Length: 140
Image 1 (cartoon, rainbow, N blue to C red):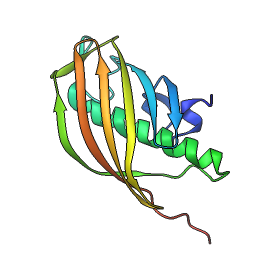
Image 2 (image 1 turned 90 degrees about the vertical axis):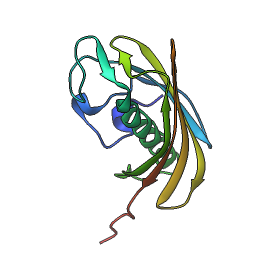
Image 3 (image 1 turned 135 degrees about the horizontal axis):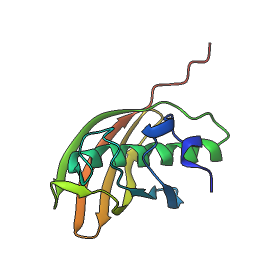
């Protein structure tokens, strides 16, 4: 499968996902190893659970990237508009732990999308709904 960095408009240490596990027309499942680089907060032992929103957003971006590549379209920049019903069984993720992120499309048109998101790991369950926006391509 394609490298994550080829699917999302992020580069370097901002690419947080490790690999894609599965993808279909309705969503994508990815994996992340929680890092202690301090990029989004945390320390050598824990990363705040709110970073899960970025894990979810990057998984949505990877899904959009796969769909774009399948349609022979360019990778587009996207924006997180909001998060609803974020619920986590933990306050922080343990550095080194492996988390599985699943995003499932609830609604999507050319620019707006709503995704049901879930993060699972040992002793970890996080759920949320993310609203995202992709501006139209500039055809000038």
